[in-house]
Length: 180
Image 1: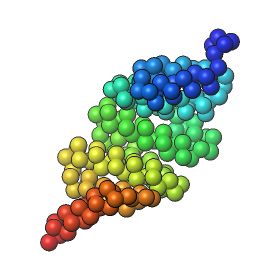
Image 2 (image 1 turned 90 degrees about the horizontal axis):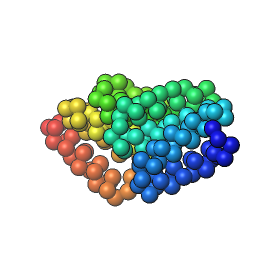
Image 3 (image 1 turned 30 degrees about the vertical axis):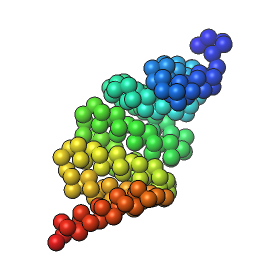
Image 4 (image 1 turned 180 degrees about the vertical axis):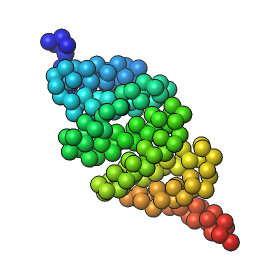
C-alpha cells in the first residue's frame, strides 16, 4: 500500500465507475480498495469490497472470479454481528454459484439468504432474493416451483405497486386453472 492510497477514495471512485457503467474500472477499484482495507486490518470493509467486487464481476461474466471474491465475506459479517450484510453475502455467493453452473448449491444459498432476510424483517431484500431463486428454478426446468416462488416474492414485497399486483393476479389465475 502506498502512503497516498486512501481506501475510502478508492471505494468512492469504484462506486462512481459502477454507477457510470464502467464495470472494468469498478472491478479494478473494488479489488484495490479491498487490498488496501485488508492491509489496514479493516476486515469488515475489505469484506464489503469483496461483495461489491462479486457483483461487478458477475456483470462482467467472470463467474469464477466473482465466487472467489465473495468467499468468506459472510463469515466476516457474521463475526462482526452484521446480519444484513451476511444475508447479502449469502445471496451474492448464491448468484456466483448459479453463474458457475452449480445449481443445487446456488438454490441452497438463495434459500439461506431468504431465511436470513426473513428473520431480519428485510422484506424487500427477501422478495428480490425470492425472485432470483424463481428465475433459477425456471432455468433449471421446474416451472411450478418457479411460479410458486414468484408468488411468494410478490406476497412478501413491502410495496407491490401496480405491475406486481398485476403479476400476482396472473399467477393466482394460473394456479386456479391448474387446480381445477
